[in-house]
Image 1 (cartoon, rainbow, N blue to C red):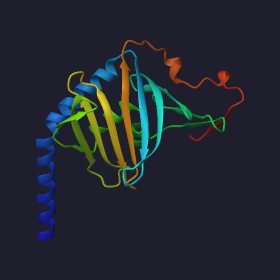
Image 2 (image 1 turned 90 degrees about the vertical axis):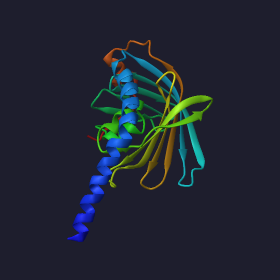
Image 3 (image 1 turned 120 degrees about the vertical axis):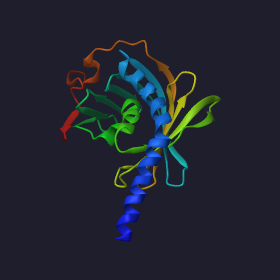
Length: 214
């Protein structure tokens, strides 16, 4: 009985912390997310860095993301990714192969800035924002932790520029303590994309093997 009462009190305190700590952060992320989702087209340059469980960097790639709502086209040295809002095509250039899938929320969040920002809406505690300086910019640092310990991400920290209200960096820690960091190096929201730009066009890759994993 005492254990049950303690559990209930713990849950109530946790919910209280969510209400107190997340409101300011949620307001900041809501503004950034809504600006992304309402744009006709965004083009972002970025650097994706992989770190080991000790935080040591061991791989880094540059890339460009074209975004329209929840659709995106990702271009990197080793792969290209298209996502039309439901289906994802991943072109692995080294083996000339395309995998087709319907990705999960967490899979999308690791490569899509928009999906990353949207992940806070369900099942995550947003801690109160902390003011930091990142690459000579004043930013809001907002840490997200899952309420469900079985989530793929152990922790997510995002950095939003105070002046532009845009995402500048994101840092993920997976359950196995491996880490990924995304730095956004350029942002332009003056693009207008057709929906076809977010779908893999087989006619342009006639010699590419297509594997449907759906």
